Picture 1 (cartoon, rainbow, N blue to C red):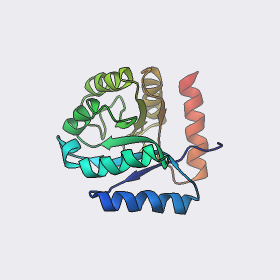
Picture 2 (picture 1 turned 135 degrees about the horizontal axis):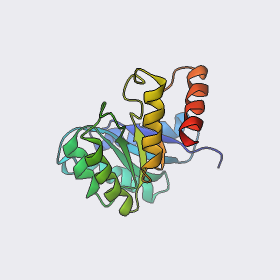
Picture 3 (picture 1 turned 90 degrees about the horizontal axis):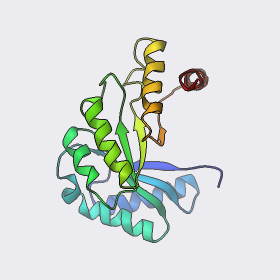
Picture 4 (picture 1 turned 90 degrees about the vertical axis):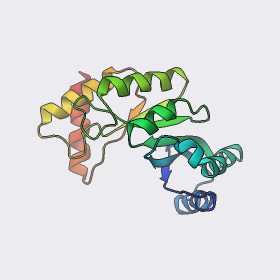
Length: 178
């Protein structure tokens, strides 16, 4: 009740997906994973290719081992295809105003995110700071303002490797929200 646990599986087979779910639950000492994502879909038509893995995730959801099933896409075709996946609960989408490490132009990605949101799905932004954090604090603030202003991003993730980076990012979020 105090934490939301999300993980990703790179599984390409049903057996690996099932093993990942059990391993995650054991390692995290939890009965369920709040959100489990298919990690790094790179091709159009991925839904058909990943059907056995998807079936395992949906069965785990029915059993209460997973509460929400999602996907992270890396490429325009898989991102666009994910919009039509009615079984998805969550999308992890690369978004920033500078088109850095994204799957398309920001306006095109946002249009797809709006379709996802209209379908009732959760959207988590990633690559808010590109891959490296951009060159300046002003760029990071601009990107945060952009993402926070979209109205369709429910949460976002920013990779950090130190407490100082966490503190600095929280400071930037406050500045961008002001």
